[in-house]
Length: 235
Image (cartoon, rainbow, N blue to C red):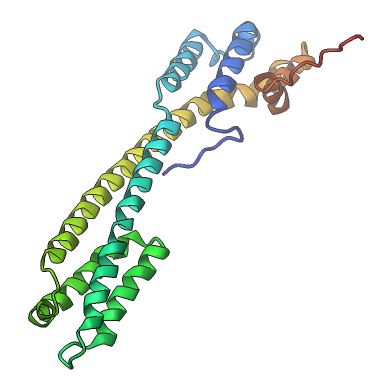
């Protein structure tokens, strides 16, 4: 992804561009006298780039969309806890040598650790290992009353988690694509604004040196983030 080239935030850039565009329109004749590059075509191209960023999608919406899906995924993973608790109880009732308790409990404890540390991407493989062990010892477990339906519950949960992971990955990809497009549009706009800033000191050097301040980052920030006026209340 291309990085932003400018010192203003992504959110500030539309207002920065509007301010510079209005100021440039005011001083257009002086810029064009300085260089024919600052002609009507330049001004129209600048306006076109400003219009382009007005149409950019809202990144805040996509941030909220990703956060919402991440939250749903975490809620879904919490459904694994009761399944692990039930399975552990049945494992502990199997006392014969056919069941290696240290191995099966390690699988369960490993999944619990994954849940606590929110290593979502490892849950699928953890469930697979546990199901492999259960299937290998299913006859012995069923003798202790282990309900085979729990296997279906594990598989359904694993399937739902996989579907949600894919959905989340697609949304994150969508956000990355849109962010790249936003940054590209902003960089294209910045190139035009940079031409103005670079020429500015020479444009006004002989006639209106005070106008250079109008294009300075400090003045732009003051303009787009005006401080609230203080009202004096007379008692």
